[in-house]
Each structure stands twice: as C-alpha cells, then as structure tokens.
Length: 495
Image 1: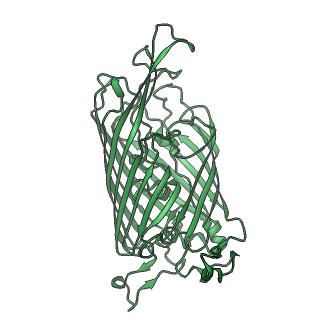
Image 2 (image 1 turned 90 degrees about the vertical axis):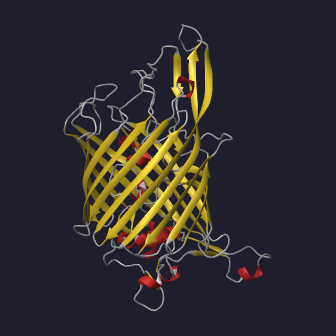
Image 3 (image 1 turned 135 degrees about the vertical axis):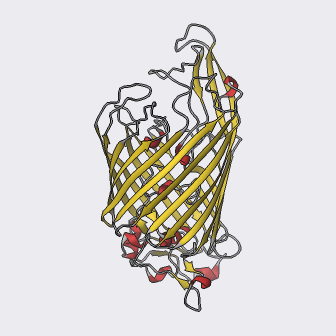
C-alpha cells in the first residue's frame, strides 16, 4: 500500500521551455528525469552558463544596474519575470488487476479495472530573482485509492527559496529554506523525482510496520490499547533548511528538518490542505547529508573538465537537442540521516471503552538513522544503477517491546533508450527487517520483500508521455500484495 500512494510528483517545469524558447529535451532525457544539462541548470539556480544569451522572454528590471555601485546607499537591483512562470502537469492512471486478489486487511479488493482520472493536477512556479536567488513552489491536487474501493483527495504544497554563492568561490555555499529535500533527500542517484518508473524506490518508500488493526482501525494487540502512533519517518521532502554546493565533479548537501512528519506519504493525510513534509515542531530536530562524485560526462557545474575535453580550454555544454540523453559517466553517491521519531500510546483506564472514557497517554522516542551508498553508470544508450541503505531503529514500539530493528534495503535497475522516445526499464529491489518483535506483537503487513518491476515509457510528444508498468512480488507467494501483478497505465502531460 505504501508503494501505491508514493508516486512521485512530475516536477517538470515547461515554463522554462517558454522562457528560453526551447524544447523539453534540452534539460530532460525523459521528463521529469533531467539530463546532465538539466541537472547543471537546476543546481545553478535555474540558469544556464551565459544565461542571458539564451533568454527569449526578457525579465523586468527592478532598479537600474547603476544602483549596484551606490549600495549600501541604495537598494540592490534585481529582476523578476515579465510573465508568471507557471506550468501545469497532469497525471492520469488506469490500474489493471491481472490477478484480482484481496486486501490483506479488508479482503475486499477484487476490482479488475480502476480509473483514477486524474491522479494529480500540479501547478508549478519556478524562476530566478536576480543573480543569486531562485524560487520553486507547487500546488498539487491528488486523488488516491490506497488500494481500496474508496477515493480520497487532498491538496498539498511545496515551496523553497535558495540563495546562491553566500561565501567563498562560486557554487561553494548555497542556502535553501522551505520544503527542502526534493532533489537531495536520499541517495542522489536514487531520487524518486528523477525516476524513469512510476513507483518510487522501495528504499525510499518503506516505513516501520504498524500495529495490526481491525476494520474500524482498532489495535488488535490488546483491547486495553486505545491507539498507537509509531515513527512516521519515510525518505521524502520535509520542511527545514539546507546548505549545498557543487563543483565540476562533486556536490554535497546537508540539512536540518523538523522530522516527525504529520502527513507522511503512506497513509491518508489528516488534513485536506497541507505543506508536504511538515512535521511537529519539537526540540529534537533531524539531520541529513549527502555527497556525490562523478567521473566522466558533463560536470555538475555545466562544464566539461579539461581532461575530458578535446579543446585546449574548458568547454561549456550549450543547450542542445542532439542525443540529449547521453552522458557517459559513473556517479557515486552517499547519504545519511539521523532523527528521533515520536511514539505515542494511549491505554484505556477502565474496561468501559467509550469516547468519554478516561485513558492514559504515554509518549516516548525512537532514535534512528539511515546510511546508504549508490552508483549510477551511463554508457551511450544504457543506464545502470544500484544502491544499498542500512537503517537502525532503537525503540520503534515504545514500552510495548524493547526490540531494536535493523533494516537492509537495496535495488538494481537498468533502462535503455531503444529510441529517443521509447525507453524500456527494469528494477529489482528488496527490503529485510531484522529484529522485529513478531513473536510478541501483532504487526501489520509482510516485512521481507523482493519486487521485480518491469515497464516501458513512450513519449507521445516531448511533453506528453505514456508508461506501462507492472510489479511482481517474488519473496512470499502466500501473502496477498495489493500491487502484485498490477499493471499501471500512466499518462503524463506538462504544459
């Protein structure tokens, strides 16, 4: 069920195509996945090298250039777009259940065809504000069925502002505030926003198993337990601040966020309108960081280093449509996260269990961390990726169990450009949870998973794509997975 609801946002920004009067493939090998030019464009604050040479929609100047010489006796001049930098992206989903099974809890999902039309409507705004500031935000309407017969809907928002080149050499230190982590939470080589496939990476999507519940949501472990709220952590964008920087071959990012996510991806949100990744503002904060190094191909800064260039001087990559997906290279990425999750347990004080009956609340914490490493190799038309992430949760079930849990998540994937518009792909991934107190607690779900995902993505146009994808759960044939052998047909269009 987690994988069903954790589909990534499209994150393509056609407003830039209008601003530069160019096609989407200038920055995307298969939108929303960026090519090397698009990555450099994004990290440089939505700017190309020699950006002013390519802009076709001139911005409006807020103050004359001469005011720079008068500062601090004058306000530093800047620019803003002449036209609203807005883009609209839509996702439309049809689900085909090739082997109608039953939901592990309700046992009533037998539908062969399910239509979620639309699944998402996203309004995105992004642009630069002068030389060293950029802004991104989106408002997304979502419809989701959570592998059930009901359709739920909500509105979620993200936004951040970034200030580039705060100190030292160019690109060394940038500050991002707001909904951080969309392009940096998790392994740089395994970001859901940059995935070719429809479903997210399992290593990003899994959460600590909940207590087993009845149809009405009651905890089945003990009739005296009124409710249980566990650690809500899952790798996803959160609200906070982030420092990042990059050079030709390296990049880094480090941030602090609230954690304790209020509306995580994997369940129906508590609120109809909310900021994605917003968490409870407690004294304990979460911390994350990552690093990536790239051999070959275009540099993160948009330049081809001298040792890789046939020219005497360093070359810059100009916007181009020729073989836009190719970037022969190997990228290593590392990621770490350290946090504290809240554990809340409510227990009835009497055998009379009504709304007004007295109950006692117990609050505890679950200290946890994640450590991961990944590789991404690109050669001509073929891309191969792999990653592993280890996790540790010290006390995920509070006083109900003194067990700690170790997690091991991994994946291997490949995709191939059969044509510039046709991309078959495959991914095999798994998750193992060691130390779960299955003998003393009634927990929800199956805990060791292996999933084979097969799919093909076709671009009907540069800004319109169609995906067909299915997932096969190979670890446990006795368990009914809502996603097993389900075929997803996903139409995505950005304007």
